[in-house]
Length: 320
Image (cartoon, rainbow, N blue to C red; front, side):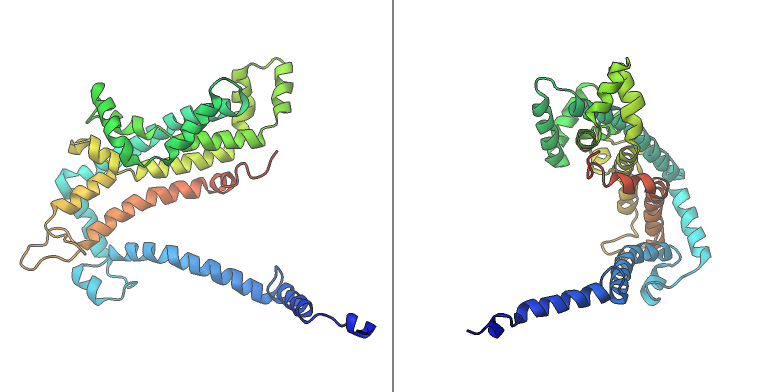
């Protein structure tokens, strides 16, 4: 074989080089096609998440015939929204407001207790070395993997032993159990808190409590925001626990109250289609408005804590 044959460029390598050049020029960070591709994907995801919420908002403005006759994203009337709101407030003499108040109380109390327990626990697991530390970590991880339904019976028996069933503490105390927060806090401090910083503070005379309060806790503000949002959202949408542990209407939270509202009214049938010959008491707009009442507080909390949620999502990804 001649030298000219040895110097002949390989077809596949030449093709890959040209394709790489085309991709970097047109689809890369500065290319027009890349710009269109990135924003096109983001727009599709935005439509995927926002269109159902927009439909839920517009559904409150329509009555049952309009939901079938008008276009899905068509607007009905403000009068229908006002009427639906008054009918919800009038349901069982305003119990909806009580359910809303209970949801806020349960979510906030559970949030405070869970952060007060999980943040120090995760910090101690990360910086301290004591017998049984790895066992505690494994138990925390295993608890995270257990389905909530597997804990219902032992949790009910334990609460019943202390006469807490059908009280507000039957919802707050189990919701304050937050193994995910403990494990994520452990990961954050184990990967992002320099041991030299703690050693230097100990040399200066700081106690262990002062190390946590003045050094470790301020450094974990993104983590606190992320855990607070996750915990609040979980507790706000908590249905299974209150449904099992409460039987007093005055203690229900919003998810259980909505379930009672749907099953107690003869107007709502599977698929939200009223049966022929049955007087319609509450229509689809009321159910849609209930959904908005559930969604809006979570959206407000996310907008307030957005900076911390996004920062906390990368917790522990870069070692300090």
